[in-house]
Image (cartoon, rainbow, N blue to C red; front, side, top):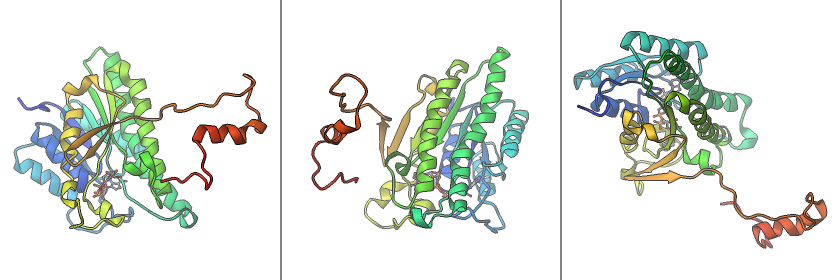
Length: 299
Ligand SMILES: NC(=O)c1ccc[n+]([C@@H]2O[C@H](COP(=O)([O-])OP(=O)(O)OC[C@H]3O[C@@H](n4cnc5c(N)ncnc54)[C@H](O)[C@@H]3O)[C@@H](O)[C@H]2O)c1
């Protein structure tokens, strides 16, 4: 029996890149896959290709003997994502996992970033990860309350930019940092219903990575196969991973790296034992960070 036999999984943005690789790996491991993709360009603009890439992914899955359907709605569309969850359950009898992967970039320096650049990227990544999981969680909660067995899985997608920052990505990095915290909240709130939420941080040679200046053929490019992260996604969608929740996993080539979130570090305590005062902070903050005569350089 395959790891994901009998499990039904929605993957967003699964027409190309990482999402496509996840959908194929899930299907190879026995899952029924709902291949969602709005089919847009790198910056979220309409793509007028005749055949949607999601249809091609479904054809590939069917050719290997699997079951898959397409869904062409936007992850930012609240009602459409509610319908996606309901239609999936109606059609396949259940839903076991959602993989939130869809997105696009609108990189600009802070001073050139427009309101629309900011809103569009927050909408597709952060809101788009919330919508699908929100409706799936409502379904799982209802199932749990009705005494039915639940084995729900949420797999979110953050990025190095969301964890450590990146120049030109105020919108994207903020959304991706938000997704990491969204994962924590989903894990905390849904644990009682046997639903887990984990987050991956992939690195892959897709059109998205190319757009931030990394070109095919450069050193290390071969380690950036979009399929690298997909076995991890498939395992996280399985019943087996039920003990793991609220975690952040970076996949770098063939390495799986556990990422720790914010931790408390060095501390400075007021001299008086009472509230900190402005007067002691020029020394206090220096003590906290060490001496930086030329200022603190952020790498
Ligand atoms: N490529 C990388 O190195 C890398 C690194 C870290 C994180 N990520 C993240 O991985 C995910 C996939 O990235 P990728 O590199 O495969 O990009 P990609 O551009 O190859 O694929 C993204 C897919 O999402 C779809 N999409 C965009 N907006 C959508 C919407 N509103 N609704 C539904 N589908 C939509 C697009 O049509 C596209 O097929 C993204 O969330 C990205 O931020 C990628």
